[in-house]
Amino acid sequence: MSDSINTVILAAGKGTRLGINTPKPLCIALGRTLVDYVISGISDFSSKCGKKVSYNLVVGHEKETVEAHIKSKFSHLDPSFATQEQQLGTGHAVKVFFEAYPKSWKSAYTLVVCADTPLITEDIYSQLLSEIEDSGVDAVCASFFTQNPTGYGRIEQKNSGFNIIEEKDANESQKAIKEVNSGLYLFKTEHIKTFINKIDDNNKSGEFYLTDLFKEGFNVKTLQFCDEKSFLGVNNLIQLEESETILLRRKLETLMLKGVRMNRADSIYIETNVEITAGTLIEPNVSIRGNTKIGANSVIETGVVIKDSTIGDNTTIKAYSYLEGAIIKNHCAVGPMARLREGTEISDNCKIGNFVETKKSLLHPGAKVSHLSYVGDAEIGENTNIGCGFITCNYDGAEKHKTTIGKNTFIGSDCQMIAPITVGDEAFVGSGSTITKDVPSKAFAIARQRQVTKEDMAARFIKKK
Image (cartoon, rainbow, N blue to C red; front, side, top):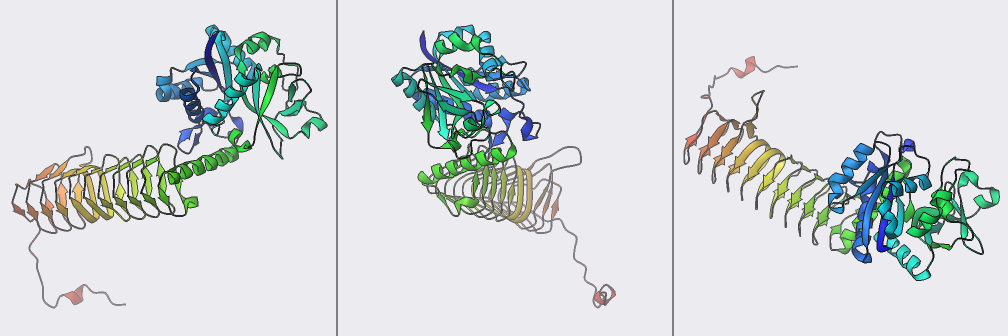
């Protein structure tokens, strides 16, 4: 018998009560799927328990979609999949797994966990393993006490062992029991092998219950936990929101304990994959999503939305700016009310002002685009200053074209660059110009009509009420 652990993640369910088309294991909470949290928690447990842990999922509904996601996200864990063609209960699901992977009988232990329980932590798995090793029992069921046991299987303790009574099969006195089954189990694999084929479907659901491996007279026990919220399963959108709220609070507390300051943390939304370095301040009503990283001593002001972006040290993102797929380096200022779209890269000591939009553009160190401008498919050189109302005219109706502006160049207000076009180093473009031809380095360019003034003609154009 190998001193290893099978993990069997039950991920075959459809999640009908959620009322959405997404398979239940792939529902999103705080930027990750439910099953991501389960696998990550087991991975954390694996790194500490000193045993070889295998990752096995029983799939069914939309199995191709579920498998594709897990293979793309967790290929390094070498996950295995068994298909439960008909959802005939948890006992049937575990039996399907062992039929698909008979070599798994050689593992000393088998951990069974549901794919819709994102709040279970490494510490809980570790406690189950310690309990089964120290007590010498054949199986441990994680349980908890709750004032509202509706929907849970009841733990009916006996002089020798205990029974788990599903709610549909419980009588009135059993329904009054407050200790309930969490759905998380750790077995000695030999115990499953001995009894799995003796499970029947003689119950009101007509299913094969894995809980039948816990019966009076068996060498099994419960491990009671105080925090019932850790075992919250997601069966509807209300429970999904409740799980996300708990995950969010955990995330915010983790960041604050590491030195990230937050003003009115209860109004801040930060997803699980976000990384923020100590010394940074997050102001109220900020939303930070995806694979975002923020450096040290930066400030994210009120109302900012950041998605899949990287922000360096000592940078300020001013109020109500929107960043997606952008890279902003050190000692920069962005906004307020700026929009930085995918492919934007802002180098050190740059300034992006209010009502500026950028897309697929590189600003070299010290460049400034102060206000009311659009910079798309462009490269702007070091220490170049872009005046108010600047536009890169990058789209000709069929294709996008690039604008390149050199270093130490000055672009006056209200200028348009008709791409593809290049402006050299240390050039000067006069305000109000529409530039259609390349401007060489150190050149002055101006493209506007001569002003015409007609004396005493204004009255012809002014309308009076």
